Image 1 (cartoon, one colour):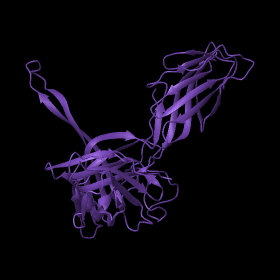
Image 2: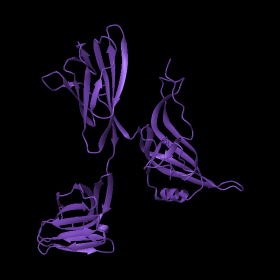
Image 3: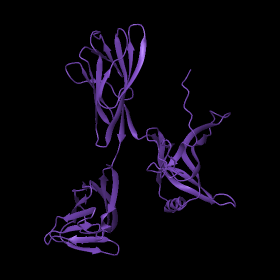
Length: 407
């Protein structure tokens, strides 16, 4: 008999914005997946229709009591800008309720899988009947791929993609490499280990000493924090198999718990869970800053900043490699025109975010090549020397990107 799946209460399954917060006073949410099909006409299938999948679309509908959030949704619809939505289970807040003022909004339970993707608003309808509360209905249509994820990164290093790799001469350390981590398993010195494609077996265990193995995990990026490790293993005493599963909160030891004699312990699965806290990507159009200064009489150093230069969050520096080419900054359209009569215009850009102190790594630039009469949009690394292949350019936008840590 299969396992009975847990039923989900309709009050718990909700729609959330990109920050994982719900819209107020919702009465109903629906999520619809639709696959368009294309009927194929062929002499090979004259009796029954033969169809192929064309594309899949996803639609989300939310019905709510009318409130000021209707205005926010109207502004989003008019901007025609895709927004990120999440559809999943709300977090269990115990005896706290939004309606009682205990919470500003419901939040998504990031420990459970939810659907997420980009959506646009395709319809927004308000309804007001006499003697009843005003309501509104909003319909979202997917733009691009819809995926199912959670706020953990789950790496099944053994059964999905990775093999055990022996990387020492002692026969006790076996390394596992996943998409987000490097882990190794160290077995007790009394164990003899045999390797399979997707598992490791501890064999010929010394029955007079404790048997254990230790799992050590190192995330490969700065944004993943180890939440816990789950290990599934099979104990065989020569007659019976006993399935075991243990969780450890941090890198640590798993003692093999089984009565009587132990012949084999098959480590079947090591699953590593992370909390994932990536930085916020902040973009800033530096040419729209409030100030611009030329700071050098010999070479041109264009220095932009947002607001007061001493307290500004964004400061951008552009340095030319030539000796004082002609330049003009237009306050009306926030553009910078540079002309060099001798050589191509060459510039180096850097950007700094003051609080916290973060340097920009990349930037987008949009400019008009006046000499050759065409527009250019491109992305560069900060600090990279850019040869514009032109003596005369007009720069419209320089958008710096900063990764602001979420502490």
